[in-house]
Length: 101
Image 1 (cartoon, rainbow, N blue to C red):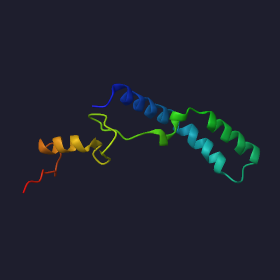
Image 2 (cartoon, rainbow, N blue to C red):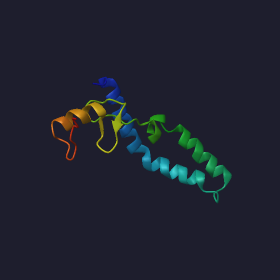
Image 3 (cartoon, helix red, strand yellow):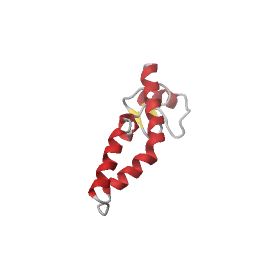
C-alpha cells in the first residue's frame, strides 16, 4: 500500500489538471498560432508559465486504483501487477486464468 500522502497528492494533481485543462489548451493554441502577432504569443506564454506546475498533464503518474502502487501498472485495467494476480486468482477479472503446468 502506498503512502496516503502520495495518493492524495496525485488526486490533487488530477483535480488541478481538470480545472486548468481548458485554459491551458486556449493559451497553447494562441502560442502555436503563427498568424498572431509575436507580442500576443509572448504574453500567452507568460500566462501559461504563471499557471500552477501541477496543472500540467505530464505531472500525473499512473497509480493502482486499489493500492496506489506507482510501478508495474496495467493501463487497461488500472491496477498493479500484484492486484492483477490476486484478482485473477479470485476470478474477478473476466478472461484471465492463472496458468499452472
